[in-house]
Image (cartoon, rainbow, N blue to C red; front, side, top):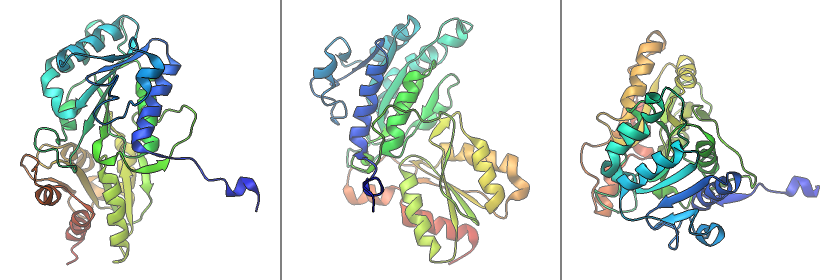
Length: 334
């Protein structure tokens, strides 16, 4: 066996893929900088920016005051005047603190100036539960952002995609939210060393199947892949679609799958009511109704704040078994 044949692809954990994506973005553009609460000396509370302050200095890795509204305002002003800011909002729960800046400035400035200014602003934030941070630090609020015209929204599930999403966002001329997942920081996967960008607005077929489609958002992709293995034992061949980008949504890839399998389930960690899954289900129903052999199913968290108690939180979150049971219910298996 040759040396080339034994060489394995480089593996990197999600947390270091984030660091590398930000580092290579700062290297690619002299006009890029990172700003946020505790992003500098501390490297963020999640340590995702560890080493960047020492490497790039305080003018490009900026520890900010505790003001999310000020941070987004900084991003809007810097982006409109020729810079490429990366703004860290520590927890996605905190977007409520700056929603006016997000909805009425960040999302609308380019439109209101008739496209005469670009707004290449990347917002990096952590979403999701699963690590016992309680109701105010564990929410999944991506549907808020997807409802605002002018924003792009990505939820990368793998180390490969989180690095590629950060670089793609930093290269884009529009505001892009990259919602990372705090419970995924230890997940390891293949990550090329060179800079690369994933395609914004292009879904990924994670697993090909013939008789059921699961559309899985963010971390739920991993749970859906496990559910597919469970279901395979019952003769159910599941296709798993990872949208990666929620706004703009790659509806065509989803519809192509549903037209092949004739059944679909959408799963996300956010509460089921009013979640992005409802929009995806509606688009499937509107565009592929005649191809469906069953109603489009949805799985999400119950309509409750995220519990702090570890056993309650685990009961609250969707998981592989709940997904598998949801598929069986739609097929009519006990």
